[in-house]
Length: 262
Image (cartoon, rainbow, N blue to C red; front, side, top):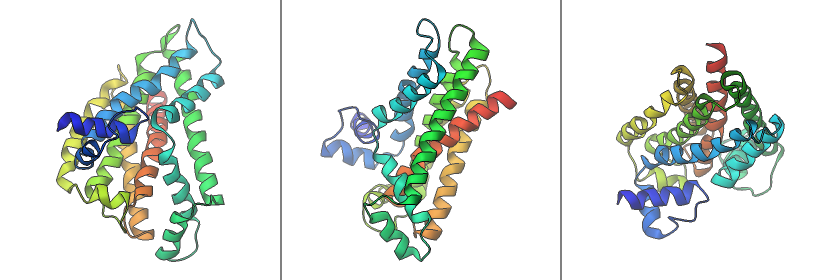
């Protein structure tokens, strides 16, 4: 069951061609602890493009930043970006919950969704540029483990943040959100956080950047949850997808700030 759940998590959270069968999906939907576990793998893959900034490649920083953004969506897909766009459109609606829910279901991309998508992509690119600066300042000829560790910690944090909402959230209507939140209870948050905690020291030799990245991701989840409950009536699938993307950006920047300022 553990391996089946992990296959399902890989199939849902990444573009890896495994875990797309019904048994894997059902095992995954009952196992929010798989989110941070997959986060370690995804974070490791996303950190690889940062190595291009060091010899022998020594690629220009903007090129590496572009490669980082591309890697994020090659590895994880663009499905969660749909949640960002939908929540962005809902956020600018002047109306009640029902009007915002209609905006979520509208397949047309509005101004709010466009701005939200642009901010997420810009956030990833600028975070990558800052990580390259950290690597150059601290590692000389080679990208230090610190910069790579921040990427992994941020991804684990983003996955743990999403899983936390799965555990404590209630969906406002039937759909992906209700399928996931209906299978887990608040008590399932404990193994999620326990599995995410080892990501904190990955930005060695400092503890604060990784820890800050994790906490920033969880804080983002709390903000999304508060907004979604007040404005939408609960945690929908779009809210879960948006949490993953927003928490990743927030965690990356928080980790960078913690490294450079403290």
